[in-house]
Length: 168
Image 1: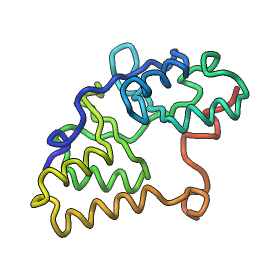
Image 2: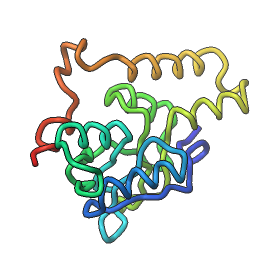
Image 3: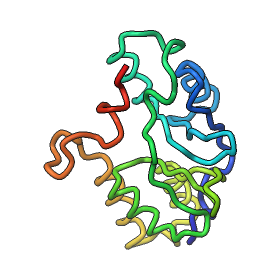
């Protein structure tokens, strides 16, 4: 299977110069936990999660309308293409320990997002495709990305987060 077979195609991005209040509103309105961040040409330059928004508010001690998406987003997020193999995409999720991957075309333009929810819904729809090893792959992906960062010796802190991203 390919990423495009299960990805979510309707994604509302934001811009790095928008407020975190705007990003939070997009997440609320679209019932999602992250928003891809795009430049003026609609190329993915980052991603901001609901956790990023909360931590930015806490660490900066300022309301969301005073903080910019650029201050909290993960810069240079891992991404996949629509024609990439779904198992390889899951490997990327495991290695990067992320629940969602922006899906971009060859020019880096946003075309969708691949989430754990997409993988689970695909498994639910066609159990035949996710039987046996595929179901174990999904379980392994969930297990790997859900490990706490603080307990992982190979990753003492979340890359692209809480370090330089919150200098204010």
